[in-house]
Length: 232
Image 1: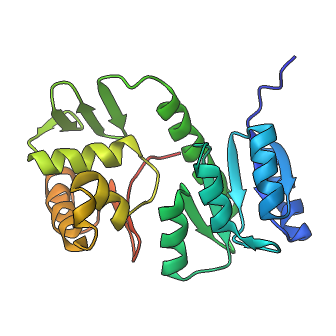
Image 2: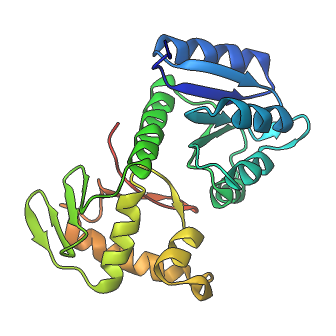
């Protein structure tokens, strides 16, 4: 009989951290696989097809970002980076390479589990045929009618606001970098125009948030990009 529990591959070279993650995830009903290097991680993703990957960046045979790039050549498995590296440039590099989320060490177990649930839910949504409706918390988008509402209140959006919000909604809970948003919404020639995103996010917040100065739905990841909140 096939084990129905989600499989999480932990790619981490510190034995103590692997033990901690194995115990924390196992207690929540996850199956846990372990790898200690880039090569071992790629091999296990290829052979075992895990449901998600928790990845440290500092590995003995290379940078974890290289693992993300190699896996993204053929797989869309959710990858959550868990690393002691806190520089924004490294976070952006990991996310631009294809990681789904970035959680700096030290982190709380509850936050890790919440991020993991969101990543798995997003992966299931992407795998399923996309219907005409996107529901994320209080937000509903009808993709066929090009209609949006928040808590039942209709919201009128410009074409660019619609594209931006739809992109965020399709990836709810995932951190999207400025570069990713610009490529998707404005095209490859807008890669250096990060102010576009700031201006339009400010307009969306005015239309969607109860208090635009304290957004609860359209969240900023400082120095990196934005995330549409998706409660776990």
